[in-house]
Image (cartoon, rainbow, N blue to C red; front, side):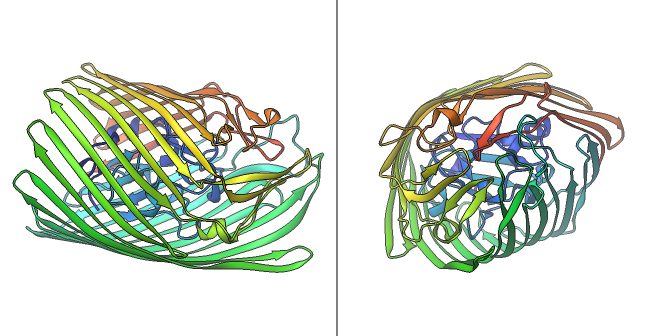
Length: 599
């Protein structure tokens, strides 16, 4: 529905196309991990993580696999309608012009899924002609091909793009506990899309359709999952100073999963169930902006309906099913006005979240700027309704079983943040402090914890609190750039246990050299220790770690470049979870390739 930077006085991280190109990673989630505070539920890459754990957590707000962050692709939500997670294989980094990450609910424009913030992905301008074709291959039998074009005409353009990837994957349990039932975990996927744009003097319109087909090996002989989804969307906008935006979309998908029970010695496993989860979501939103002098008024409404069912064959006992539909809708307004060197923002959303739940979400902020220095403060209240997945679908991760709970209540959050930014010609420094209080947070509560099996159930905890600070620094020299970010966050339940999978410390740093047709980058990202479970069991501790990465691109002819990507350069072994068997993250991964870009 627009740029996040224009909507809020809070801290927003922006990754442009040059920055994204300098960070290695097949999918966007691995590249965005360079922004401290951005994590999936577990530390696993989306290359091997089950889709149901690929929800986004920002600033330590997330104690389960559900996403508490709204992800928008050209204004259209891409969160899964059934579970709220994100299929990162659907989103091509090379087709992303920039990413804006808002790490709080400091605007009333967004509703249910944006309790912890919002991420907006923007495609390259359709008015610019673009042709691309690329291939990369590497270890672990990696092979990735991508290609597409944008062809503008007088006042319209046609775009199409396709990306395919395959890998043999890697073992997700250490060699000293691996048995005959263990296989490599990996993913094969294909994600094409087509888009038609019309751009007149005052009116713009696009239609887009995209498809994802993916198949995953989950690390044992019997456990696999696959997804087929398709989305169609349209976006209309008119006006410049005073403008109207209308968005509509419909998505359908079917998710398949098999589960097994694994013997203690991991030399055998038994199939326990097969799931099929068909779901669909339909939504629309409208937003009108009007400028009067130095004051901007914004008003809008949105509606979304989702429906889905978990259909499960339980072996050998029979069949169980659960699911239903949810209807949510809301209205919102926001005012930004400038008074001297200060800019004030006030917003309010009234939202019907289903199950008889209604929420009033106010937000407010103040920005004061003079020269290169800007100070900011904002306060907000938001919410998240439980997904159909949390309400009705049971799942397993190894021998860890998580049960559904049809009696879950919505979560709510109240927070405040304050910070300052100093922006010079070649240097940028930012500081933010924040505090969030979450009521009725939905988490996976441990009921049974033995060496052979873990049983958890999704439940509303009484409360949780998240507080911390963020620092980011950027220095640019002639051809060299250094970027560094750090976040400290203390995320605890009201009973003082730390939230699962949330480290206190996260940081990253990267040097980039770019001159002419040469791009070289080397960076590091680090995570502090975290706990696997809500009880903070010491035997299930996840130690901290740091990994190094490199990337390069060298132009060798007009439009033709050689590429290099190297992740976990020193082949560091690190834990990402306990099921109760320890699970490990990605080993060293490298790819080399050729890329052709034409205009």
